[in-house]
Image (tube, rainbow, N blue to C red; front, side, top):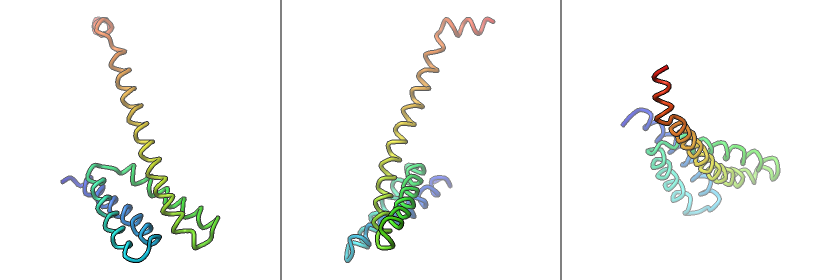
Length: 126
């Protein structure tokens, strides 16, 4: 396993474990350990596939949600705001990743079609 993959797994475990903890706190009781374990397992799984951008969007969403919850609802709303912000950050991160991948594919196909065989031969001769 490469060092980059290990870093991705650690980041995923920390970020998704924190999100699981927040969700477990909201649900209360026996759900806290279940949510933490699920968060850690999901984070490690996504980290194995290299989801660093995804984790960054979740982290930014959690922080912004916590700040918004603090400003609008006080200290009691920080947990709800943070968990909701993390979920929205994850959704937006997936959408942004899909858009970036689509643009990269489009750019690659445009570059491939811009060099037609006749044009390539002409460029080689000059």
